[in-house]
Image (cartoon, rainbow, N blue to C red; front, side, top):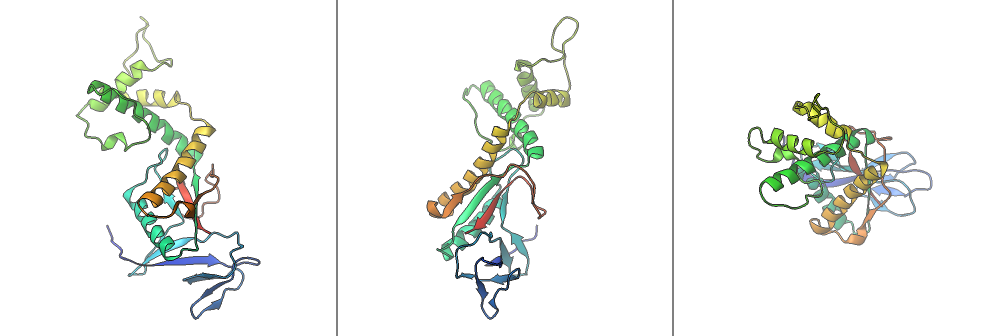
Length: 253
């Protein structure tokens, strides 16, 4: 994996009529529609534009920091995404006048399936705990089940137990007994009978924004009043970059 040493944080802003007046050292004031890489001085805070952010490394590479990505159905961040937030926390520390807006976002096509997978994993973890004698309710979207050290064949046994305890209609033989079905069919039946509502998607979007805010406050030492949660986006429209559509969008104000 290629490693990039972080050197500076650079802001990019597009100037427009009635928006902020932006200036860069030796570059003058931005004309409407002009993009300037700059250590930005904002002379007028009455603007509606977001300020996307990149980190530039010593080798000239850049990484888009305008969003934090999540796996479908989940609100927990990878170490890579936490690294992005670490850079943003430093940028906020160096620019005390700026605030960060966080908007959780879902992609219904991906996140509905992701939430169904998370719900099944939650049941499988609960079954595993029950078999170990540690009865308790498992909540949240902890690390995926495939990151546990399952014994050979353990996943099939857990899934079979959860499937047999399910309340929906399942295939039966002529005697009325449950049929033995292969793992993929059990999984598909479980997913098909796990409802995911629009409210569930909105809750996931809000949890993603909250996850970002909590990290910045606790691990990034950013003052709570500088991280603002704004209404979530419940679609994947208007995404122009190549990043995941299951994300939280970030912008400076």
